[in-house]
Amino acid sequence: MVRLLDAAEHAQAEWLHTTRACQADTALAEQHRPRAADSQPAKGVNGATIPLRPYKGELRGQLYSVLSRRPGMSHQVAGWVCVVCGTAPAAVLDHCHEHGYVRAPVCPSCNTLERPDHLYDNDIRVASRYRRLFDTDAVDWLRHWHRCPGCRTRTTLPLPHLAAWTAHTATRTLRPTHPAPRGRKPCGVLRVSWTGSQNTPRSCLLTVSVDFCPSGEHRVLARVPYRESVERFGTWLAATAPEVAAAAGPDRLDGLPAVPRSVIADTSGDGLALF
Image 1 (spheres, one colour):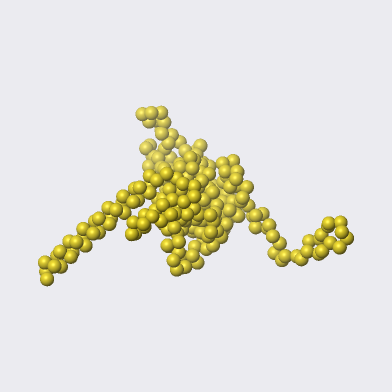
Image 2 (image 1 turned 180 degrees about the vertical axis):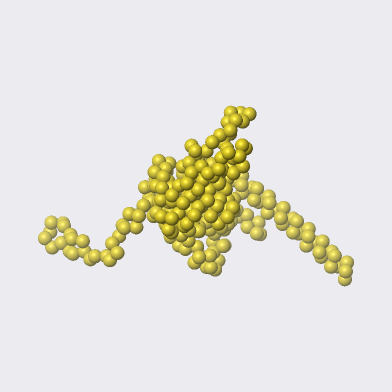
């Protein structure tokens, strides 16, 4: 009996090892798969090819708190391709933590790339990946973030992202540099903290500072009120992603009257009607 149990345990361990190796190979193949416009194949559990479909806004305007409790939602998400990279299968529903709306299905890699580096609840480290989010791939990420109706209507970003943008972009010229073997190097590591909340914008203040300064002489670079940061972001958004800025703003919610008015038929024959 002992020998049988040992053999079963060994067989189970070998099976787990083989399964993990196959999953790793599949994940590597997915990362190197060329981008497709319509659909992409993915390997299922039984090895069958499952076509991935592009996300076309099926969950637009819905709350994550509702969708996350819906039966079968995880299986539905796995059938989409990531809206950001367009190469890997989606695994999670990226959503706005500030307003609660679903943005779109994304893969774990893109979801991790977007996540702010929180040191504390009101303090984040501006990591190197923000150079990609706000420079090289800014338009794609702005379009993704503004899938949230709350952010789109207010023409802003969730507070952690807005704080990172303020430190990385709006106050970039204030960051000092130090001599380096190849020219000059930006000082230390950027960090931004805030007091108050985006729900009370009058009292919300963003403080941009530098950590790990080589000479120890730099501390606070700037203190930017929340409303001023929002205004700067709106100006930068209009210049960086005009099509995203054009779809934003509170006027987009006023397209239809609150109470529809009936059409009064035209009886004069002049082709005129009153609404």
